[in-house]
Length: 228
Image (tube, rainbow, N blue to C red; front, side, top):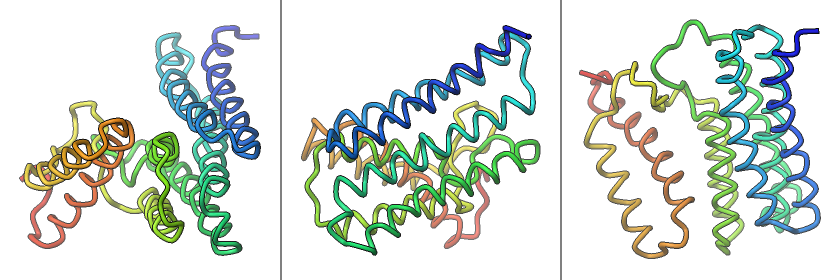
């Protein structure tokens, strides 16, 4: 048995367990705790790949293990959370829309695994952990919003995960986003922060979401390519 391989796989497993615990907490209506557990799962997920590379044990098993755990922690857990928190008020429609987060995350992760060697310098579509973090920080902020608006936002997150909207991977290798869309996104974020500073975690994630969307719209309208 290669004990070094157990380290990154155990970290992936920890992310999975945190996601499952988040689901339990959502069903118990412990929404803030459920959101925190998703965020903790994101932190764990950010460490497993680094641990595998540091120990020299990267391989296909770890990739598959990571993706399977991510489907639970960043697909199922936020789906259950947003349904129990708000979308249950919409009945069957709320069930379907909340499930789209899990569906979008699964599609996003499958595409990432297939294209991992073909796409460099950016994420194609919102990363599944980022989508989960949008949901988690929204709930943790305690917003009480009309469930129809929550449904629209939830569906938007699901669509963005499998879209071709580019998001920076922060590794310094990809083309930068255009300054205009980024500036507009940050101004909106600053205004939201001014209105409710205590919601800063959600504002950060919302601003990140807008950066990708506005940049994609700018490219569509102007015909310019990123980095030009």
